[in-house]
Length: 305
Image (cartoon, rainbow, N blue to C red; front, side, top):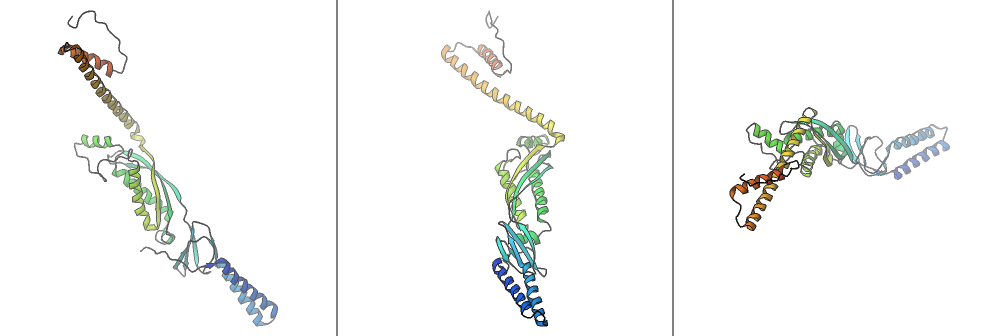
C-alpha cells in the first residue's frame, strides 16, 4: 500500500521562539517572586520544563530538503518548505534530500539479443519526489535505485542486439527468422542513440514511481563486447568494413567503366567490337578496383597478336 504525502502542522520558528521566551520569562518570574514557596518552585520547574520541551520542536530546512515526521508510530506529514520552523516537539523526524543525484551503474555483463556477452553501463540521474513514499514504501531507497537500475539495464541489453548486422547473421547461421523486436525493425545497442535513452528512461520511471522517485535522465555510458570475445568480434567488424568498402569501390568502378564505354562508342561511332570492349572493361576494372598501383604495359602489336 503506497503512502500518501500530507502536510504536517507547523508554525514559523520565530513564533515558536516567542512561546519559549514567554515560558522562560514565566519561570524566571516564579523564581524571583516566590523562590522559597512550594508553588514558586513548582511554577519555575513547570515553566522551564515546558520551555525545554518546546526547544525540541525547532527545525531548519535548506532548499530541496524535506523532513518526514512520525508521531507515536504513525506518519504525521512531510515538511518540505525551506526555512526555520516549529513543529510537534514529540514527533520523530527523518531528513531526506530532494536534490538531483547522479549515479553510475555498471558495467554489467549481459547477453544481448544475439546471445553475445556484452558489457553495458549507464549514468542515472534521479531525485526524491515524494519523501514519505521513499521512506515508508521501500526499505532503503538508495539500494532500491541501484537494484532497479541494474534490472532495467539487463532487460534493455537482452532485448536488443549489440549490432544489427551481427543479429541478422546469427539468425541466418541458425536458419531461423529474426525475432520481432519492440518499436519495429531491428534497433541495436550500438546505434540506438536517443531511442534507447527514451526506452530506458521510460522503463526506469515506471519502476521508480513506486518508491516516490523520479528519473530525470538515463544514458548508456559504457558499451563493449565482453573481453573473452572482444578480439574476435573486432576482427569480424574489421572484415565487414573491408567488404563494405570493396563493395562501394566495385560499384563505383562499374559506373565509371560503363560511362567510359558509352562515351567511346559515341565518339568512335561503333568501332569497338565485343572483344575490345571486354578487354577494356577488364583493364579498367583492374586499375580502378586494385588496392596497389598498376604498372603500365605498352602493347607494341595488336590485340590479336
